[in-house]
Image (cartoon, rainbow, N blue to C red; front, top):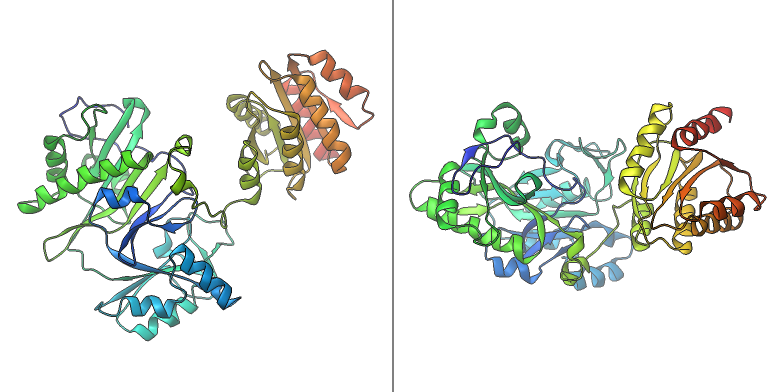
Length: 452
């Protein structure tokens, strides 16, 4: 958002970038008659937060394709998690539907225009024939789907959503998200919803409306009605949409969300306002309070290195380069990536050790970095304020010996106990290249790869 309008006023605004990243999203819907979430951690269940929200969601079933490998085992597993064990059973679950929609479930957007390596085009399909449901699913399950948000090789589809296809006479966009510029939550809406909301925001920003939410008052009736009117709902539907908006804000609070995005918030020919599709970002800091939601964690599509790093309280994000970064502090980590790039190299990751790092975390970090096949050199850049450089040095030498590190290692240390740390490194007998400053370290790391 470029600016915050005073509470009580709704103005056309440039659309804010959603908080979080695409892989940190969730689809809300109803499976087997009860509210469910498709979390950014890739799970399908119905936590109480959605039930108490009472928003108008629409029914679907989720069928898992991995049952093929071990049908009995997978059936038990899926029934325990609330899945239906086959697409055929999903279709039976929707037997009264006039038309059925299938949607491939992966953690990426743009699925409707995606392409499968099976040759099937599109991750979303409509059919009136139950037999075709299975045929389409067979071309989705177990195959990679490539979209504008996936890697080039695509992402393997293990689950397909099967739902009753409902007619939508009009689509709108609605979201509640945290806006740092406004120091709190805001509502963002547009009368033009559906798959092209990003294009709407870019080409016609005057069709994007925003309402700042007072955290002490919540969404007021006048705000909800004004947003509903801006979304184009008229007559009885305006009140119905306003009611949905207030319930979605209750959901936002209930599950400690940083974003609840409904696209589309649709209007049916029968005169109903329905949340046809939704995405939810959860606040990681609220894990202690949202144990049921975070217990659904399924990292099947996550980077295994990122998953293991998170388990050891290390902040790791994989990148496309070949120089691994081992840094304390997010700002310093970003600066390290930038300076590597400045010297002609490419960082392989973002890694923030944090302030209270222990020797075993140092060891784990090195183990993870060295396990990445892309990594051709490791750059350690530590500025020890809270961090004890000697602990870092001990962890480095232990990891280098026990892991049999085979790539060049460049180390730059400054701060607390730095002289002791340098002594530990120099007496280790290991082929460690020391650097005087960050610029020197980046230059040496890039040079080490160039020599190979």
